[in-house]
Image (cartoon, rainbow, N blue to C red):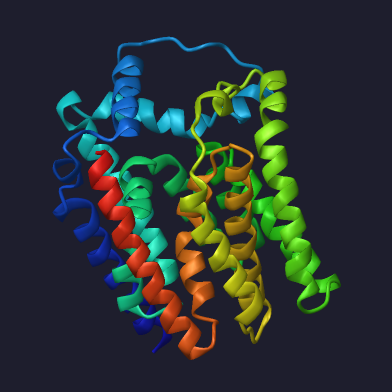
Length: 321
């Protein structure tokens, strides 16, 4: 019976991913190509022509996502140039399928389907496919029972996108705090940590990247931070989760704590003038799960508010596109 239920979740995840990626013509809707997709296709073409990139030390190599580069080279070697976009869309499909396999087992289907259709998710799964694929692997690792398999998947995710190390560290930090900090003090500690993380992300991370010679160094200088009007909504959502959420076990408490941390981190990074919207995008489905732990009426109102906000995001998204 359990296998039948699992297959049902996979089936729905497959159908949903196929519809989202292949049946909705997102580029036609916004009237342009997604920036990251264009950059990926250019890099595929460059490496397919035996283009050279800078030589790296072992440490630099690890943080330059070598597995993703191998995937890019593979696409260039086996796929015709006219089908590069199709190959990248397949990566979008796989990332969303893995996401769906995780979330359809934890929350009602209609909630996921309705709330997934928003600009954050479109940008994540259609444009920011490298981070989407890497984070989807972390979700797979979370559900694995084998320690060796879990470590292997985490390393794989890191070699696709180095920022996955941050999410792994956040998880183990929250898990440790969960065992030593009592009740609501837990969320106050998380608030303080989120402020420190935001400050470090804005002013400290770039310094470390420059020392390592990482290509992402200097990103904060030209990346435009999200407006307070946009980030305040997520701060208020974190506040609602902090005050009203209920949990019955460690997994539920960690889910709530993780959501509060990411949402506050995004808000305070915006205050400091940094860009952290991608962290909200990657974690958005987890936030949806955390909302399900609110009391019934709070949950319904919060889902409705999130849906309304998604419509506003779509309106703005189409306007700026």
